[in-house]
Length: 365
Picture 1 (cartoon, rainbow, N blue to C red):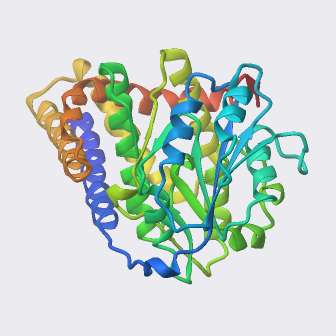
Picture 2 (cartoon, rainbow, N blue to C red; picture 1 turned 120 degrees about the vertical axis):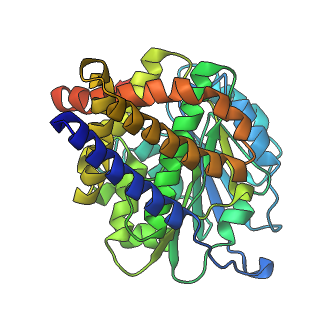
């Protein structure tokens, strides 16, 4: 066996072991509280220049099923320059559970979306804060399902997000989203969190204030990631990521390569502050995918067999997740996802190390 084949095999075996661990964690079950004990909740959505998407989001929030008088929905117009504010204003008129605010106060050194959310939390009446994004549509049972997991010792509950599939470009992004969230779910449920996503996240308001709020945390372009680890580091609460289809959220995929690149770079820059264990996870993926790129130069039957094994691992992992989410049909985009996955896993770390400037919602960080 050549040195290339040996390194490729070791990396893929590590990748396989990690995948099994992720699957074990993801399938962990959690108890729910009775409906009469479901806590009050505040949903926060920050919107900046989302005139094309915000109405879909608002309509889904309006259709939520939640115990009467226990739900507040705050929509933040984050200094939009398009018709976002007007659309929100028209929609929330006469709907008492909705509250619209416009970001005006700068809290500490907070910037952008993080500042918008912090402004809303100051006005939140719910015991639980749920967040989503303006390009998302939540299922009617989303908030109630998430809130039902709040046993007394639980501080954060995360949920799965899929992406609306309109073709191969959005299809590969959807598979990537599901893959990454499955990894996040598995690691969080094993009490070794690596990441989360703010478009389907919730946390106990008292825990948020216990860590001093966003203003007490170092600035990050991934505010959800920052908050996750701050509460985890308290070492007194449970953080869970149940695999529950009743809590599913659907977001919109990036419309073009440029916006997708900016999204991935923002996540990559935010991930630089990950714990050491995340670098071991990324290392096996990086070496495995680099070996695939180098395969034409070191082609052997053994190397091809290792490649097929790696593809099987990803397919098997995604199939099991998508089957439970009733999204198996999106596996037709598996090979476009694999091409995309191979390229960004190898090249994104290089890009992030060379340049950490982030452009997000028309702002530079």
